[in-house]
Each structure stands twice: as structure tokens, then as C-alpha cells.
Length: 164
Image (cartoon, rainbow, N blue to C red):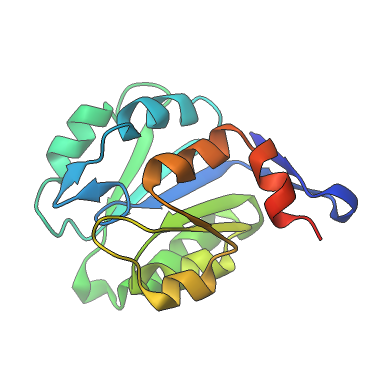
């Protein structure tokens, strides 16, 4: 579990970290340097979930690199267009986990609802750009995926950003 102290406004207790993959953790379907080590560290603190449309067809390779099946396991879900709009699928996904316990990380327009609805939404400014709707839905903006994961690994960094 990750606890984020908000001062007089209490504490957020995160049990899950849900990540968009393409454009958030990757550039052109390849994991960005520094992501692998941090994901291994993060999975020891919370349950990690990856949501992807597998745009580049590289998700199987990403799963192998991240060793998703090794304990503690990472859950990967491939979204299908026939199941409806991706933004709605992602919002429903985090709702099943319990939004009060979820940190959501993404960069795309299809991430906007999960960023808005999660206890903590982090928009990533990555090499593939960031949708304005993702920025408007997030509570925090990170300059890259490594910085976003580091915020979760070092939650005191969020105290000054989120407290009122």
C-alpha cells in the first residue's frame, strides 16, 4: 500500500496503480528507459495493472520484459474496440478496483475518465504527446513516465503538490 499524506485533508491509501501503456510507458511501442526497474519496485507496494489497445502489437514483448507473471504479478488487459469506447472501458476497469484506492497514469484522450475518477490521476507528458483532456482530468502532471512512477515510489513528493 502507498499512503499519501494530504495534511489536514487526510490521507489517500492506494492499493492499485493502473497504467495506460502506449504513449505513457512507451515510445513507439518500446518501454522508455528507467520504467522496467521502477515497475519492479512499484509492484512490491501496490497491485499494478496495465491497460492497452496494443497499438504497436508489442504488448507480449512488454509483458515478457516486465515479467508480469512473476510474483507479485502485474495484470495486463488488452482493450478491444468492439467492447466500446476505450475511455469508458478504462473508467469501468478502475471502478471495479474501487476508485478510492487507485492511482491512474496515462497520457491520452482515452485516459481522461480514469484520470479524473481515480483517487490520484497522473497525466504523463511523454514523447508521444499528451491530450488536453488527459491534463484536465488529472490531479498531477509528470514530465515523463519515470517521474510519474517515482511519485508513487516516493509519495512525500506529492504532499506539497496535493495539499490545500
